[in-house]
Length: 299
Image (cartoon, rainbow, N blue to C red; front, side, top):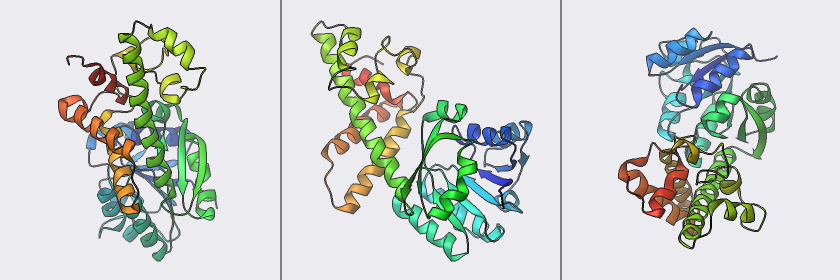
């Protein structure tokens, strides 16, 4: 049976455009968020607003969540007035929050015990990707749940990858974003050094973008204005992916590394540097703005 009735819980910077894309795709969508203005905006776009989680999930075939942290995900699904206690049997759960692996797997177990299928499906692509429905979904969960989720995920994203069993979507996300945080710092340091040595940013970009220094942080999100017109550096570092969000993912990577008993020294250093930038009051900027701290700019 195809899924037509969906509940979407969590209408923040990412959840809101994702939900709007499901409305555009023709799904019957009921939405809930603790911020009433967000619910009203989605209602105006064609969704049905709900005043509680229990009301939002009544009669639906699938529930999608996009929440800030593991504690929120656990509460929303496992709480007395939460999803599992109120949703019809056999519903599919899709959690697109970025949270710790342990919580993700624990909620998946709780869903299975209640007779539901669940996937963890964190995303990459930022607000722009959410708006354009070009997100990458990194999916953990059973093959059957993954296949059921595709008609929904395909309306919100472009690349959908099954990473393995429960929690593996979260594992993929935090590993990927640890690479991202480290590489952005490396690219920023290189451009600052080039500047001090009298090498123009465009010249370094022209060389390194086609040489062994090439990486996404350079070619798609260059932290200096000019070489990549679409990068936030050309908009005074207005966030596509905020410092605070990058720091959250880096901290998750370090928590996971500690629990796994492995050392990630560059990941730890990247976490420390983004932590300093955030504490200085710049958590709202795009994460590529870290170059300003590396350069020593007055802010």
